[in-house]
Length: 361
Image (cartoon, one colour):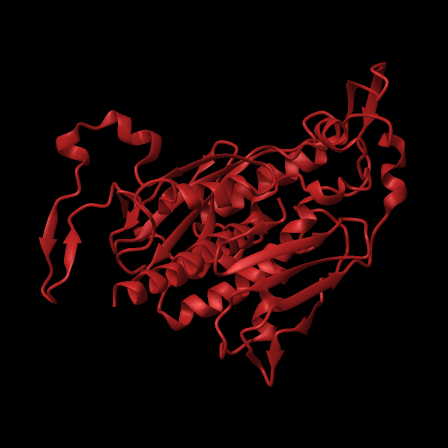
């Protein structure tokens, strides 16, 4: 439950209110130049307290690389990175140590393990995702050398939707607003909605869209390890995610086969291309060279600043009162998490594919 990947493999550790959170990355090729400033920048996009529409927990999230890097390059040995917690306020959770918060992992963890870390949810806290972002930064650096680009953005908050095709959007606008939406007008509306929700002591959900460009043909396996299935697993493993769709997704059911089929042609440079991309860059579970694009749905954050009826560990009726510092909407901070997990999937499949090619040779 703590590891992901076959060749480019990560193992995360730590708790929200423990001493720190970190990751061990194994299988990263030797000789990759490690840009610590880039890793830190990626973590800054995820960290709490970055704007009025995120949790106000103050964490510097300064990463320390403890192994696997020498003279600025990976050595091919396990890379260990850790971020030490600084602003834990565990007392904010003492009131729920014997209660089950609605839609949290409290009950399931208690039943599965016989105990639970009630301080911010322990391992079930979204703070664990900083480890994925740190590892994802390495994966993104690796993919950059291959010309592969991974870009995510907020495409919906509540009923505010960016319905333009991603090819019509200016991705340079994503980091120009606190909600990380490439449409400036829609971004303002989203921020207003989230801020209103925050003031009402409630939460709201949204969608993060992701586009992966320049993926080579051949990544993925035809049966159980289909590329889109692995992307789905990676996304559904992120806290608060309730849905995943790629390519035409659920909208594809409205089309006829003659409309939905992606017709092949040969480009001027001799490459096999498709006239449309309803397949989302994956056919038969294997990348076809077109852009991979998908959407990830995030539920409203479960912790709200209102009283809710629940029960305690003895089964008695109880009232849970929301306290502490929490996001009114998780999607602005989820953008780098989605990118990180997408990069980890593609990096792992790329390296797996090289192994297959070597065996063939």
